[in-house]
Image (cartoon, rainbow, N blue to C red):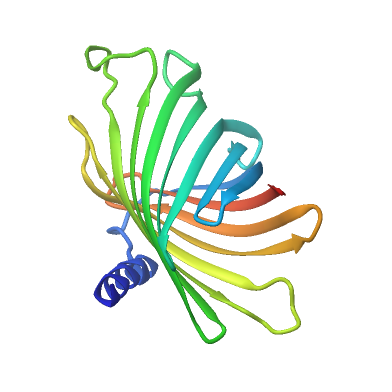
Length: 232
């Protein structure tokens, strides 16, 4: 287990320094992600979540996509959990000759491990995800996009302070028939949460997401706001 922790953390830290080759052009954007959701724990080993999210791009002036997601997690033993989720997505395609909203379906499977070292909380997640557009076949040009994602996170408990900071780094590896394969982007996130005893929790984060190994890389600066209500 310790070897897995070191490997995942090392890969996540490498994302901090992962940059593609120099490019004459680079796309930059300011996005906003807004989430509202419910959490429910029917058993001490089981947890479930339902959420909806709206994502805006083009300097937060246009809808990029919105989706609903259902997920569940089971704790095998202290610190180690397995989970999965499904997501129905409405994606706004505003490029090319045929534009409009597309329907996509995504599912993911997770393996997670978390532990504490004094006032630090460390977490590691390995995720497999699978996404494709509904209503189209491979003959129509729709190929399933699969990714393996590695994420490491670090939180710090500040005594007497409710807005504890949390940092995470995540690296994406894409594989697709008929498409470009390999590491294609990374995310760096800094955020915090405020827990309200009777009203759930409110989260705020800043995220940088950057494409790598592409001729026209995109760097997105993302402001996120999340509200989660916990059902008793």
